[in-house]
Length: 338
Ligand code: KG4
Ligand code: ZN
Image (cartoon, rainbow, N blue to C red):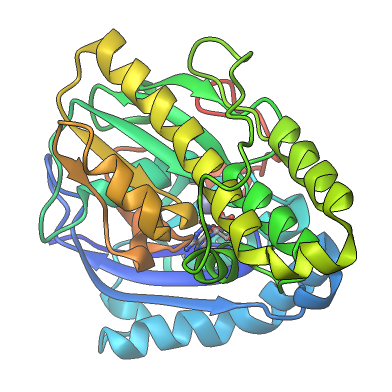
């Protein structure tokens, strides 16, 4: 049984996991899945790359130790090391990749380079209920929003059908939350505020002009900004819940419209969600009512984590020993998924 130590540092979460028992149709079981989130970014209203890299430097070793401890294992039990090489923040990725290289080199272990977006898709292949391709996969997080036809298990089997032309869905939630005076990350706070609001109070755009399966949240963001400005200070506070509910509704509808379109176009009969925005209650409700089975991994596997990276490693290339130390990171665009 192969034991994988996986490391993920593409954004602001320092992640390590131990995953065991992967095979041809399963990414394995997450024996441990540790995430150290950085709260320092809150006061800047977004992730600051330098602070993220520094945070990873401080957290990496304790997080790996914790992942091994929780699995009741030592590095001697590990058969391979998997690491996210991109896309993401270069400085942040470098900390994870340098750590993975060091462990692999010191222990003589194979190193597997994993694409972060392939990782989000492969969260669906983890036990206890690994999904079987083909399926349509919507990944919506703070950094990415894309829709893919997943024909098989490898990154080459993931056919990206549409992606955001500007902000990611989570980023849009965060920016809207900021306009409404809520903290970062804004998605959960905005959802809570929206519970008391009327989703039809303010009709906001769903990127109708963007044809096909791409997404766009810039127009929605501007529309919210103008709506808030036109309301004036007093009404804007009094109607904050209505504003939040209307914004959330517009995001969910935009995502749902594309998913419905993609299901019709591809004939795929299963849907899977990933990314932090999959935590959103109304989105989950909407996606589970589209007439096809909708699989949503536990939130700890939807948000950034290393177990999904270990899962993807089952279908990614092991780097030849001589090349392992030369593995490079990429911020965007590896020519396949990103
Ligand atoms: O996947 P994730 O943890 O990290 C990234 O790779 O970005 O996603 C974080 C994003 C944030 O933008 C956050 O606001 C959003 O997911 N999010 C939500 C909810 N929970 C997290 N958005 C809407 N509703 C939620 N309940
Ligand atoms: Zn992510």
